Every structure is written in C-alpha cells, then in structure tokens.
Amino acid sequence: MGNETPKTGLQTSRRGVLGAMGLLAACPFAGMARAQTPAGATPEPPVHSVTDAPEANRATQGDHVSPYGPHQAGITTARPAHGMIASFDLIAETPDELEETFKRLTSRIAFLTAGGPVPQLDPGLPPADSGILGPVLHPDALTITVSLGASLFDRLDWLTPHRPACLSRMTSFPNDALDAQCCHGDLSLQICANTQDTTIHALRDVLKTMSDRLVLNWKQEGSVPVIARTPDGVAESARNFLGFRDGSANPDSGDSALMDRIVWVGSGGAEPAWATGGTYQAVRLIRNFVERWDRTPFAEQEAIFGRRRISGAPLDRPDGTEFDVPDYAADRDGARTPLDSHIRLANPRGPGDEASLILRRPFNYSAGVTRSGQLDQGLLFICYQADLDRGFIAVQNRLNGEPLEEYIKPTGGGYFFTLPGMRDADDYLGRTLIAALRAAPVQTATQG
Image 1 (cartoon, one colour):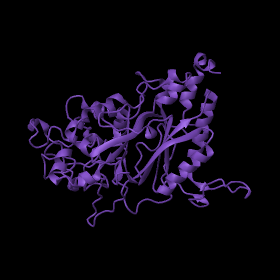
Image 2 (cartoon, rainbow, N blue to C red):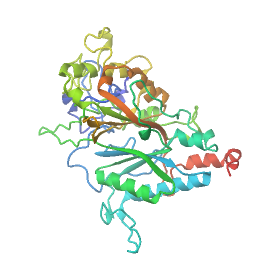
Image 3 (cartoon, one colour):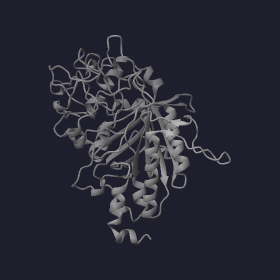
Image 4 (cartoon, one colour):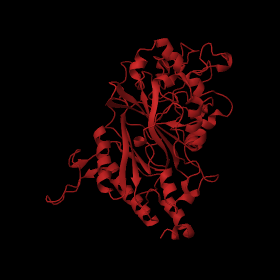
C-alpha cells in the first residue's frame, strides 16, 4: 500500500539480485507494496515471502513443514509449487460433535504432513489409503490450513455468539459474476505441497476419513511455476497468466513483528479471545480473459498495471526495478503512472494506507475450455489479514472500476476465519473455540 514496510524488515536473500531483474505482481492487489525503497536508495530485496516462486531443484519429498505453533502452517510459510482450496459443509449439531470433528481432522493433518507407512488392512476390506503416493507417504512440504466460514456460525445458534468480529458472507463486487456453486462454505482447507499428487492425496484422505462430518462443495487447484536460476545466479519470480511477475508486492512474511501487525489477530479489541493467533482468509477465483489480453497492445497492458511487464519497475522509473517506489507526489495528474492504474488504485500511498496491507498467497489455475471455446485460466487468489474489512474488502473497493476489469472476472470464493495454531501433538485445531463454548454453558446447554 502507500504505506511502507519498515526497512528493518528487509533482509538479503536468495533473491538478492532480483532488484536488477524486477518483479511485478500481476494479479489484483499487485499494488499492495511489500518493502518499499525510497527514491534514489539502493533496493533491498525481501526474503521469506510466501509469493516467492519455488526454486528449481530445491524441493524434495522429505521437505517437512511442522503443523505445530501459535499459528497454522501454510500462511507465512514458503509457498510450494502446488496449492488447492477445498470448501465443505460441516455436519455437527452439538459442541461435542464439533470438537470431535476438529480432533479427527487434526489427527489426519498430523499424519499426512509427517508422512510414514500406510497401514495395511485385511485384503477383504477397502484399503486404508488411495495408494496414489505408494506404500510410504513423504511430507513433500504438505500443509493443510483449516478455516471456518460465516455460514457455520450463522447456522448453529450455540456458535453464533463466538463468531469472529469481521467474519461475514462474501458479497458480490461490481465486476463479479459469482457462481453460487463455487462460493462460501462452512469450512475451507488450503492444501499446499511440492507436487500435485500430494495435494490430491491429502484431499482424498480427508474425504474418505471425514465423510460423516465434511461434505465437499467446491474446490480449485492451482500451481506456481518452478523457476530455475539464470546462469548468472539470478533467482527470478514466477509470472501469472497475464504475463507479469507475481510476488514483488507482498509484505515480508519473515518479519514476525510485521506479521503480528497485519496478519495475526491479537488479543483484546473487538475479536473474541479464542480467535487470538488466527487470521482472516479471503479466497477469490478470478478468471483471466487471456485471449483478449493477448490482443491488447503491450504499452496498454503496462499502463493498466502501472508497471513495466519485463522488469516490474514502476512506469515513472522505467530503468528501475520492482523494488522502486513510484513517486505519485511528482505525478499528481497521472502523466507517467495513470491515476486508474492497478498499482495506483490498490496502493495510493497515502496516509493510513498501511491499514490495508494483506499477505497474498496466490496460485495460477487452468481449468480447461469454456462453453464459448475460450481458455478457462486465471488466478486462485488467497490472502490473509488481521482485519478483513480494512484489508481485502477495502482494497477491492478501491479497485472497483479499474481498467483491468475488462480482462478479469471473479467467479467464486469466500471469506473464512483461519483457526489459531495448535501447540503440539497433544493439542488440536479449534481447541480455543471449544473452550470458549464450554465456558458459556447457557448458550451451549440450550442446544442439547
């Protein structure tokens, strides 16, 4: 945003030469600035961003991301090459059933993310596992992130008083054409891993072992191009399906203090105590009209975004890098960076805009061909923030009517609240919510 990430949050990284290459976040919210470099200063590339492209020849089956900690994995942890959002109806009529659901789901997450031999059962029974990963599961950087939708709190009266303060049902924005079959849900799973087979295996495991509690509504898979270093050692970022680099404008997820401020729900304030350590998840399925985009003049594409397509540099600094900051104060009439460009609308760089910072974790998706014979490609947009109203919703409202809308169409998604993390193997996701329910006997007792 027009807000600037404190420079102390910057670190030298494997992307140390990216400043010479430049990136461009080529998706909605591309203007949500990560670390900003004052005009004239030497750019410092960020590190540990969830939007960093996976690097070729680095990922292994043994990559393990611990599911334990104050926050769930899969939010500030590195983004692997494959990701998926799956949305479910949750079948639970009492707090006891909800607790049992949380505990069983936690158990599956602990097993799947750690890996190990698949149990062998009586051949006369269905196998314990789909078998698509073989007899031994490997961690493969798998993370499964659990979030709850507003519909769950709306439907269960005993849960309603414990609803997170900002959690709401996603409403349609002016450019949306939402498909009801791909929106909302009681519970979402964000599943990420090095390989697509691992994400699919995890989903099938959950569908099989939790079939009495979770009913799948919709899902969307995506991927991030794995980038090889150039011969001179440059680690470039991936591009999205509009041809622009993606990842330069994300806050540094390696900066714990910054994440505490913009991603994690803290104690006190309007949020219920049980939500401390959680975060808000916004999901958008954004189709790209790539055929139309590919026939658009190059200069017009750059004007729409407000950046150079190759380098990622702001248009008012054509020889700069992605880390350079556009000087809107010296360009008040938009002669160099159009006033309605994506980055300028998303990031006006005015006083107070830092309140709208969000942490993006997007994946490209390709889902075949539409009935009209066009490619169904786009962005599985996922972002996290401590305040949904001041984060995603505020930014999207600023982007309403932008020229980029001619080339994109949001078709699905939803808002969810991501549960706080689990401390260790004796803990379970949702424990603090269940504890809050137990401490409110009046509300829970009436539901039997």
